[in-house]
Length: 139
Image (cartoon, rainbow, N blue to C red; front, top):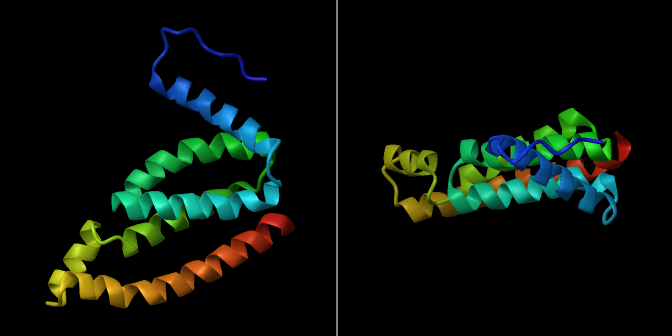
């Protein structure tokens, strides 16, 4: 069991212990096979809302790593779920810098560009979600 460091320590340690607490709550609530798919969905939501994949990585990875240790998840699968969700949300978000630059480079209306990219990205994300569910139980 991890010991809580003294109060005088810096922010990352308190974040780590919040993540361990979150993992212990998840441990008693849902089957670990669902966790990679849920991580993927949460990362999709965060990245779509913020418009940044790197910001999503900075939010999700410190949460996911302790969950891997506490729940005994497959590390590559769970981190891939966080990274894949971040990329999906960044690609589809209308406030993402890469989406704005792509619509400017194509000389199209920005919202039209987002609308045309969304169906293809949703098909890919649906396939990824199904595979994260399958491999969450298999691995």
